[in-house]
Length: 292
Length: 281
Image (cartoon, rainbow over all chains, first blue to last red):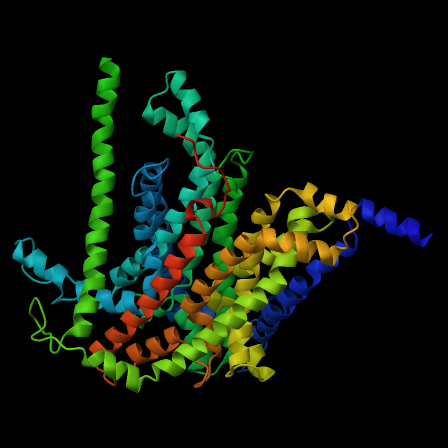
């Protein structure tokens, strides 16, 4: 009888090998799922008293806090979109084999190594009012006084592009290399030109990969924290939601409020990811596509 | 003939535009990095094209005052522990996900995907609160535990496609010859998996060295990594000379660059997601 049960379970794919999965599952449950619910529970126990939803009401009632959502989306959505859209034509050119391809890829990936602080220092030095960029602009007579590019929205935007672009590029290049090149050649033999080959063959196959890349770069941009403080305007134009969460938890020591903002942040992010993934599921995701 | 010619002419401006944009990006990026490097070697630099004089004293000072050696040791300890533990936990799970189908597989995959899809601050704040509650945070163990949260899923997600492309008949042959599961793992799979494990480990290493938020939220004074120390020294403006922070940032970037160049020797970046053979042309 025992043997029979074991066999029946094995037929459905349950056997001792699944034990290999246990450490990872326990790990993620203990260090990710449990803290998540702990934080969600904490957010329902406001420090100041009131009903369980008092923290959420307080967050929503305070425009200074509520606006952080729009501020974050206003930074994260355009920069993620730019990273993905700029990476596509460059990755298209980098397909196939040519001399110096490895060098080019390496150079394109170098910004990953810069780190937040060097990027921030560099942006302050280079784009600041007396930096090289403004000097060149003034020397060329394009502008009379320095353009303000740091300690505002644009500083954060540039820092996201610098750190996010190489990542988007690598992923898209990888998805593009996964598309069977003979499909494009087949289209060419049927008389399709460059543009129609791109629009009607490559792009539909690449689209699911683009959606995934957009989600991952969006997550990076959405969680922007150090650069929003270092090159942004952390009490005004770039007070992103992660700053609000950190401020509540570690400067006012209101962990309940900090968890509340973290939960709101996660919810907003998941909504965007869910919308993009929902659109993606309408697309073709068979073999030879940009995988996904 | 004429159509071919016209197509080439039409294609040209697009190509030039793309390479022009890339070149513009790189000129600015090089100038950005250059300005930090120049600043870290300069004496006084204010409202001129170049600093007034050149010096290497900032590097000496950074090395002395920052306790760079301590920071490096802590960073290395954290990274080594994170890499080893995430590989030990992640690779077996990746094996099961690659080879088996079982009820609830999609749910388990989603469970492993979530920590990568969520912004670190979102789960970092509750996680840090929990770690403080149980007395882990503020020590090395807390930093390692927090950094493992995105690393384990990362190993699983990069190793799963790698294991999928290993022919399962090799394992079946070994089992036919009487090998037990642990023997298959150690003597058959491990040697085949070494390149994949190495690649995943290096990527985890690069991510962990650069991971700011989680370390920032859980580190105590003696368990800071290099990024976090850099951030503190930059945000507490006025305490240290700006050039000294620049010098530290350059040291950090050089370290990351070495890691990345090593990583690119083992990982073909175009094959991260989809494994394909290079086109024979």
